[in-house]
Length: 118
Length: 110
Image (cartoon, rainbow over all chains, first blue to last red; front, top):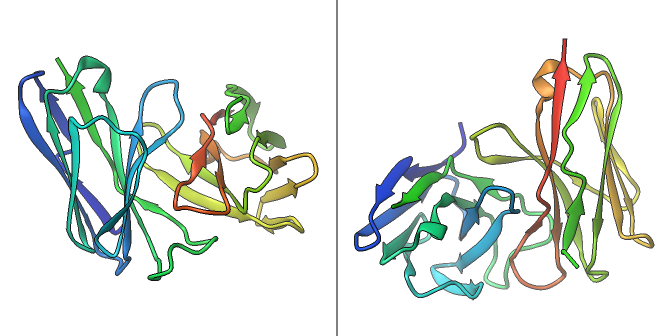
């Protein structure tokens, strides 16, 4: 088992709902990531936080809102999603320093939340 | 042009076979290279980093050719448990992002 947990594991929501995905890492890492994995597409980076500060937003629509209250927890708040947002949402963490993530730091992934938007 | 390109497969091979996967990347300034493994409906896990001089980990050998922007993974003596999708991953010199290929599917049969 990895040291990164995600809840819920499965989520079905309507386009008008508001829901949140939660990620927690127990590895002492300082960088956390949200990825989206759609069928037939490569993993897409959505957001990066380093020491609780957002360092990358990969042109993600505003209906996805990340929150990082501390280095161990990461949330993804969802509202007014579209059916094409249905995908596997993966959280990851890695070791980092204040200057950023070094080259070979492994990213550890959580099991993901499989989201279906109706 | 896609950042990281892989043959999606599937590669169907018998147990004991040797199989090789290739990957090309478009950003010549890329700094770090990895192979991740993803089992069906599971999260990706690091299989091995890829070093400039090539490296081996048991039955797995990774090679990097920076001039051709090409990475390979060789699996010897395939096991049934090697069945998975193998993701080629490239990290640019700056930023935090990892660029993932779509993955190559491997099925090892008895």
